[in-house]
Image 1 (cartoon, rainbow, N blue to C red):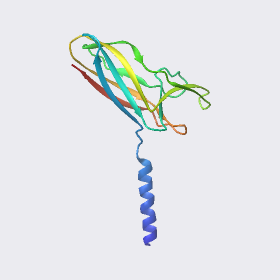
Image 2 (cartoon, helix red, strand yellow):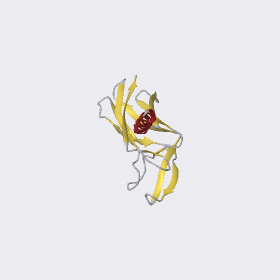
Image 3 (cartoon, rainbow, N blue to C red):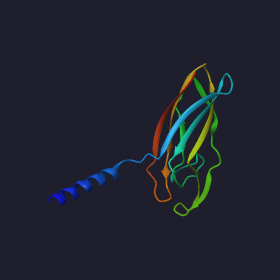
Length: 148
């Protein structure tokens, strides 16, 4: 009887451990003034070993690309497109296409123009984290970057 109870308890513990949601991507944010009216935003993803996220320029028909959206504000305007370093390129048979991704960490940058002396840049980043064997469902993280 005690053995059955221990086995049942162990099964519940294993199920609970498997049910925990993995969060292999940690985001951080910063801003740097490059002129009195222009600011460079830094949006960094620290990526757990074995995981990767996809380029903002990933073509349709494959994995979900990383996407940044900024909430409208009269305090600032976005200048141009988000910039990223050169991604890893690999042909994926599952998608029958080349995919572009980042491992370990990636620093995205976005230039903005301030309409006032200070602002709070709010928005969200959506992304999909994968390993060579699995992908998590697309995730979305909100951010808020104060600029003084």
